[in-house]
Each structure stands twice: as C-alpha cells, then as structure tokens.
Image (cartoon, rainbow over all chains, first blue to last red):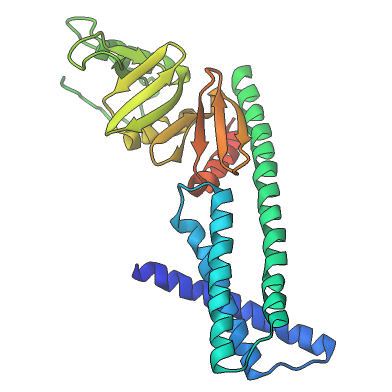
Length: 141
Length: 156
C-alpha cells in the first residue's frame, strides 16, 4: 500500500508540474493571468485525474471498456465533491460553472477513451502481422 | 537415475551416452530431447486418474496453450487435454525459447499456434487457436507479450 501511495504521489508531482508549465505557457501566449484559487483547483483536478488513471492498474481482471466507464463515474463523483467544497468554502458556483467544469473534462476524456479504443485495435493488427511473420519464418526453417 | 556431467572446454565432439534397462518414458524423453534439441513434457490424459493411464510425452510444438486451474496444470493440444506435473513457472522457463509466452497469471500460450489476435468490443484482446478456443491476453501482460513478439522476430 505504501508503495502504491508513493507511486501515486510521484505521478501526481509529474502531472502537476507538466500542467503548471503548460498553463504558464498558455498564459504567456494569451496574455492572461491566473490566481491562487485557480492554481489550487488545478492541483485538485490533477490529483483527481491521476487517481482515476491510477485505478486502471488495480482492476486488472475487469475489461478495459468497463474500466473506462467506472473511471469516468469516479471522476464525475470526485469533481462533484471538489466543486461542492469550492462552492461552500470559497465562492458559490453557478449552474453554468458546474456545466463548464464537467464539459471541460468530459470532452478530453471521451477523446482519450476513443484514442485508447483505436490503439487496442491497431496494436492487435500490428501484433497479428508480427505473429504471421514469425510463423512464416518458423515454417520455412 | 544417476547423472554425470563432465565439463571440458576443449571438447570438440559433445555427446551423450545413455545406459538404460528399459525404454521408459523418461529415457525416451532424454532421447527425444537430444535428437530434437527441444524439451518435451510428460503428461497424462486429463480425464484419467493420475496413477492410472499411460504417461505421454508431449512435444511443445503440439501444445496450443497451458492453463493453470485449481493448482493443476493442463496442456491443450489438438488430440486432447493433458495434465502436466510441472509448474507453470517451470514451463515458462523451459519453453520461452520455443514460442511460449505468459499472457495472464494462469496461461502460457504458443505463438506458433495462434490463428489470430482479436480484440472484443469490450477491448479485451483474445488469442484464437485452430481448435476454436481462445485465451484472453491480460492487459498487464500486454507489454511483455509485445516485447516477446519483437524478440522472437529478431531471433527467427
């Protein structure tokens, strides 16, 4: 368990560093500025995203499609909790704010899930070719 | 059985002498191994008791896959299912060079017998064999499976 937590924190550090640097680059290009709350929300979002992706390794026997759906539902629940905490302790969030936040992680999630789906099929195709090549060389000997 | 091994770095004609009383399966196995330079596995038909039934030598080339169920190891071939007395890890060590690769905690498959790799709609990838059976390639073994295929391609 301690090792898993350590691995999770390590991944979180990497993800947050990359996101901060990308955010800074976007801010420089767009000429915008961020504030402390945004930085904290970004960190919480990174923590949720890393945790959700981390679940992938824990349920090895479950099919990837089920895993993607479970991960999405967990992400929805954690994001809901995050937004509720922000609205209670920091500043109220309008229904439009809730919608925007959910949309901003649902779209890349669907895109990445589709990419993963495509990769499974394309990898199998490549491996099929590889197996065929190995078998042909083996039969020729 | 007594085993004598003699190491001689200058030996240019390596050879094996076998002294036996009866042509038992183990002797036949040694002969086959020396002749074919390929290991063979001892098994019994899976539907018979361990003490009964004739012991059969299995050529790895005939095996589709090995399955470990309830602490028992079974080899699936065109001619039937055979129970082996080895462990899956021992078979993996013995057969890695002969096309056998681990694809899950309990399965070792022969890549020379794979008819096709086919992903399901739920994204699980299955290896189908000539006998119509299929084995799931667990996603935690996906990377090592791919590395194994690359290595076998280089070796072949």
